[in-house]
Length: 135
Image (cartoon, rainbow, N blue to C red; front, side):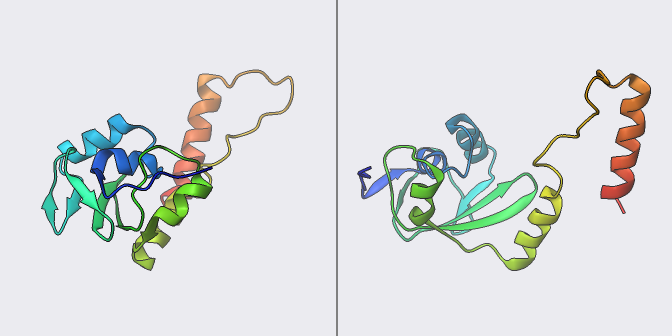
């Protein structure tokens, strides 16, 4: 697949293209709410970034830092998006993110034929998960 590399692109579009945000709307909203910064300045979604710029992203309570290596004009799969940016996020922040993410990938499993959990089952399960994740 041929990537079209451009010299400048809107920051909200680039964040969506390289899969930092799941939707362009979320990227745009993050810019509008001041969660995207370049040179410690809040930027608008229409800000045109260039290759080599450092972008600070506050997402889900984590401070992520990326360097724009290539500016692509359309959304691509994760394999093709990976070389388009360099992750400069500190190790401490990455470890904090990994600790938060543990156990979020797969849903809980129930025995076959057990049906849906009741309210009591759900409360018990929530209390159990709170005990594990909050200690």
